Length: 451
Image 1: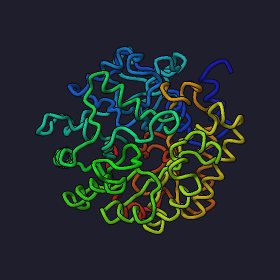
Image 2 (image 1 turned 180 degrees about the horizontal axis):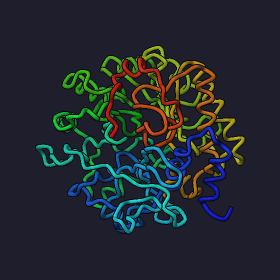
Image 3 (image 1 turned 135 degrees about the vertical axis):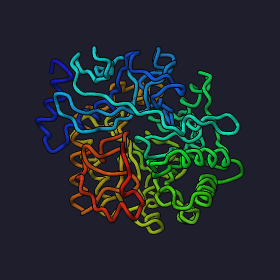
Image 4 (image 1 turned 45 degrees about the vertical axis):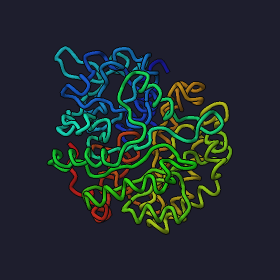
């Protein structure tokens, strides 16, 4: 096809049941977006909430390669609306790619728009600087550094350990740049705390709670790198668990508590539950047995794929199946040199994994793969997976949920095109907007303002 526009329009025509908003969102997530200088933020001193680099870089270039966007950060997220495709409100995590065919720029009227192949295809909204970002901790650190918020303010993202003990080519997940992102942020002279102090986290949350008068922040995620031995004398369950325990003691019931950690033995998982965690994300990354071994060598070595899956199922007995939500990295199934060569094969494999978990009442979710250039898979696959894979995955995901009678998972805000706030994939945008209200009430997310 002669243009990116033609490809996108062809996919929208071929897959009419996938919301058109999701087609654009997936393309932006998989391939990134360029920013004119007119669309960049003034960092923490401006009126636009800047990109926080909350765990990974999620960029298609290193900071030195991003030009002005490395000095004046782009916004954390953008919202697409209107335009010739009449897009409903769509929240998209920002992944910078200076060579992307998509560009955010101010038009002659001064208003931001998204341009594809030189044509304005939607209006662009940027997140306003939240009041809580304007207040420092007593030690001078910013709230954005300690407790950034994403998903249009819905989720507080607490990366309390910013490196991973799976280290080096023989252990690091081949698509993950957590360790490189740590190094590049430090090299750029940016504040980037390696291990966040519990008291710092509590102070930052106190500031958020005080100034978030609309109660837009509804959940927090505790996460970071894997701990294969000890960190500060604690194993993984106790290290991440101590933050949950402190948060729940100081702010009982204020937020939905979520933890992204390895698939741990049942006794460790029970400790998470005892500490007050409500939702557990033991990410399985990629379904195929061979690809798991090749792309997640550390996880294969320390735990193993079969044991990883067994632990996920065991954790459902602790948290309840609905509150176990493992992530996979959508797109690495097709990454060279070991991935599937056709979209058909990749979708068949991924759907097999979805059916395995959903048949047990467990609803995975996914992050759209961003091929960061410092990772082995990013270097070998700078264009990521084909857009068709991502669109067909949305179709297969919803169909599998329907097969097993599952509703949208708790802790992710409202589902449906025009409603969803989950920003790093379109799975929530592609689900029906009429999710059972009772399920969301149990998790405390009903009535959340999303503007």
